[in-house]
Image 1 (cartoon, rainbow, N blue to C red):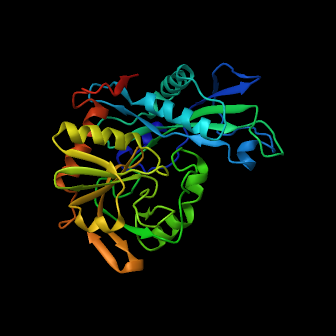
Image 2: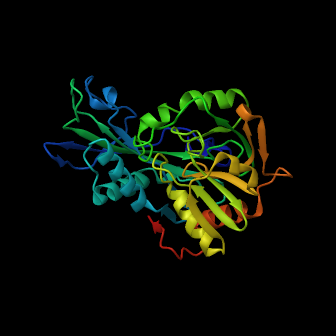
Length: 339
């Protein structure tokens, strides 16, 4: 029951809500948006999503402000990124109009599940695009399913906005150069599961992947982008195998707005010892400050939190981004849309 939800203690996980929305692509065109109360989908056993990985998804959030209004953050960027993912693995693209209609409808249908202002929780939206048409040969489907379901969630890392420990892995690669690393498809996450399991078993919040080619540069930070702070500069890795994070893109803009310099470039692992602050960022994590990074293969530990608290710049970035998302801070960038 909705009245029994402890909004302030929500994990980042799935909770059943009232409805989801769906739309099917058949005969070269998208059909009408459908509403469903079922948590399941019927899918052909030869669907390309099951056999050849024709699947892409997005993650986005809606927030309730102090004024009681629901705010959606940068949905156009999610729609654009999903189209890029669709092109990357030859799926039908979801038009902007269909995307936003589905987003607004699913929020409206599940409005009671939007967490209250000040709870630290949000309504997470999961747009999903899959190849639903059957193929036995390796080729794209001719039918697709686009759907969105929602769940109220708390912070991705259970620690919330508190520094966490991470480890560097050299034993696994998340994505190959010129592969699918820059699009949001399930295979990239499947490739990270063994490493993330190992990290959790060892007591780390997540693992940091290095580039697959040279094992020299910082790539992804588990399911998030990495950033480091030094000399009043916000620095984040640039690579063709990194998923462009909408949160990271926003933080780059906010950083410049509050007087920081910004750099998006290759970041060598050995540069970790020069950062004053470090963090992981993404829709799910928002910002997760990093306490320490252990690189066991070379016997190095890099520490960024001396008192167990986030650094001042990470804190300012986090509070500014969250303030914009909830309406507490003026949205001078035009990122928020009222639903």
